[in-house]
Length: 377
Image 1 (cartoon, rainbow, N blue to C red):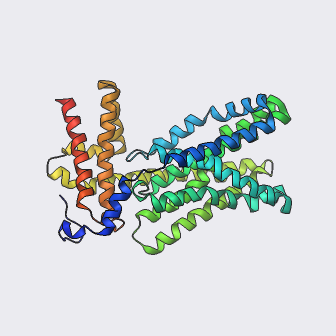
Image 2: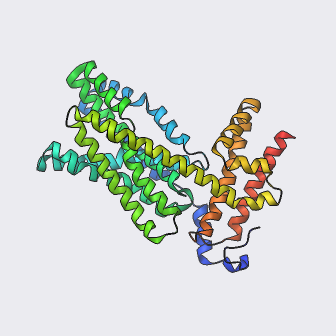
Image 3: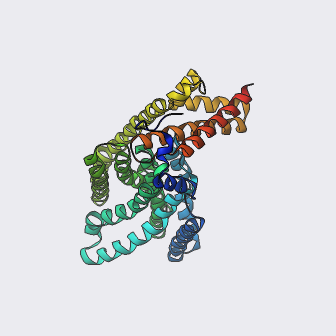
């Protein structure tokens, strides 16, 4: 078993902080009543929207908003290759965006509309209100769910889910207005702009905040840890304001879309790719002990540190042996990632060393590995 970072005996790390870490690991990631409350808020916002349009318009609007949603969620989760985030936390992020964030933002924006006008409010204050409210859930995850917020990729995933929840409810409202005022042609035009050309806008804005928090999680430089989240948030607000300004200036919108939004999205995808490669290096760096002890073969070690390798292994298990084999394979991959990222947190001083937690993660990896070996036997 690997020794603690400073070489002292494991028993010396049995501190109150370690006990607190074990307790946090055993606690539920998201309380059911919290999810239920957010789900109720989400349903309330949709109900209030339906009441303003009537059943027919609302049905068409929510259908249009729902049609592409599974594709966008699937694309966001596809990035989550090494350590898939807990479904409860992903659901909480989505529901927060579509309930608390959009409801409070709606009140704030309506107030500012009366003070400085709708156009100025959309550019000057709405981006600040909306990005702040979406960022709150990311800050909660960052500060209270450290084991599930390991780096830039996690920040991007959670931020995308918040943005998708916010955008979904907002789209229902926009589509309903377009249908009520312009009929089917108005709905088609609005769907093209928001559902086809700009479905990634809110996820993109908030992802900059999530990226900043993710960088703060993995850096060892104190000044980066403090500045990265603020820089990400400022960029999120600025990009949001630029998008809203372009949308209010007719043909300028196309220039903003082609010259700012598309490059920003492509740049974010590049950052995500670089971050995934970095996570692969973390896995290889912190699972070398398992390879040296023969728990992992050289081929398994190589596969676990590669996105393509993991994807090929999962697809091979699925098509050759079925869903159960694919689930066992994914459990093996997840156990390896959790052990590696736990060791990185200990090495970076984010968690105290705990022999019990180390043993639990190691035993889980061995159990998943044995299940995989039994399938091949």
